Length: 401
Image (cartoon, rainbow, N blue to C red; front, side, top):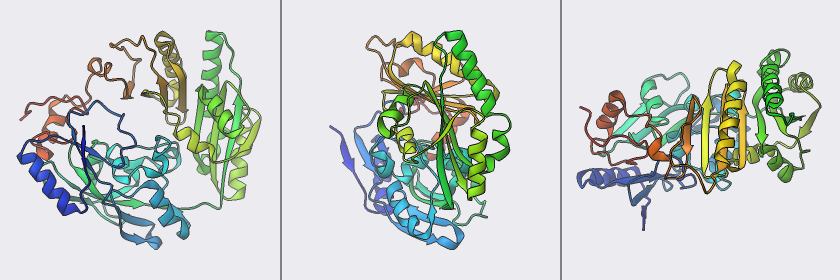
């Protein structure tokens, strides 16, 4: 049975980490615990939550900057900034209860982001500075609390996406944005042929059209654009009465009325365009309902080929409830599904595809992304005893120095 501790202050957390390092006790670092199925299994039964570190350290609306404790949730951040007409334009994929309850510390530690990354950048683009405590209990401050501050820039980016293996984030300074005057979401319903060759050709043609004029000429108002395939369109139909189709182009446009209308006109070149409730993006963000999530990246011009390769690979796995979310302007594809009972324990994934979540039996066949000497030396520097989230990267346990 796991022991869950939630230190009420950074000093208490520092003492806990120092003690765990001295006693060689492995720790599982969590925020609210809404996304613990991501990453490799962690070899630790003692859980340390940062949820109690929830506070507003400093908020300067005029500078569009806020500094909060790592345990502050995305929902709390929204409630704090909304009265000022501002928001944190970060919408990570999450479990349904994680839409509001995911903590900012865990979001930054995992470098999580969602469809809004197209218009506002990913999580590391919105972090101005942060504080964290290393594996041996040493407090560290990187970056700053103002937009122009660049001190410690590399350390901020290094910690963002390290999954808590370099230190436990305790405080984050974030860049905010003003809420736009107009915020609308449009859907274009697409029917793909059933024959595999014709289907792949139609998808490649669609993605190429998305990446060409006239759509690209009005991207200044585009905040998010995804193409949904497989079972994802049906999920939107069930939750929001969006007409059923084999594929949906979903776009979010922000700005003034003229810019948003121009985006709708550009989308109409792809097919009949309808206005849908912006709540559909909450559903899109929770489509990772299966036990497996894959991420594929490539040049935007090769997204069609990457989609086809993933589609063919999925057919060999025979999964259920497959949701595919394509970000064609960034060349990224996110695929979630329920594994079949006969799932093979050895995967040969399509090129340029990584695993975010998978059944425990699959992880041994997936190479670690941090088994190089440089990554190991960085880990040794910040967590000498390798006690923070041990095993989450599948890293070696021996010293690389």
